[in-house]
Length: 159
Image (tube, rainbow, N blue to C red; front, side, top):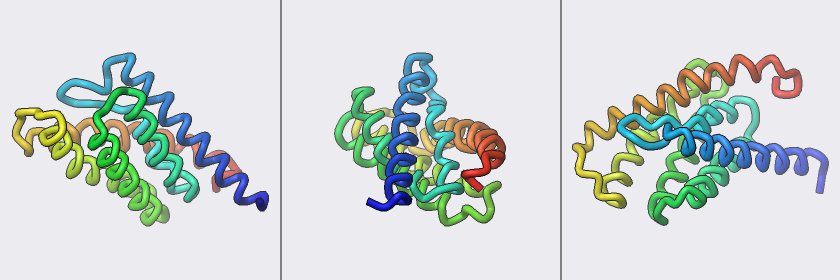
């Protein structure tokens, strides 16, 4: 295995572990439930701006976090798919980091409300769920993600 491959796999693994740990913290604090859910781990969706290793890292982290927190199988699949789509979108917009946080917000706003209704039988209107999921994602990806971006861009190895 080449040195770059090992570094990429390691970075992806660290990102996955951080995603799981931050999801557990949000769960323990009650931030991941309620009308507006704020998954602190979603702030990490800005990391594909810096490295493509973040895409599989975020996806694997989301799969593991959803499984560990007791999500149903369809939620694990489609919730992780939303994260994957968002991470790819962020990577594609890496040259414009101030809008790169938007793809995870949009993918979650589209997919998660459907999962909430179809998998968990949440009776709220779809548009209401789009707004509440979107609000939580804007907090996580927009506010916290951009704070993370400003901190991480100062790290020489990530430039």
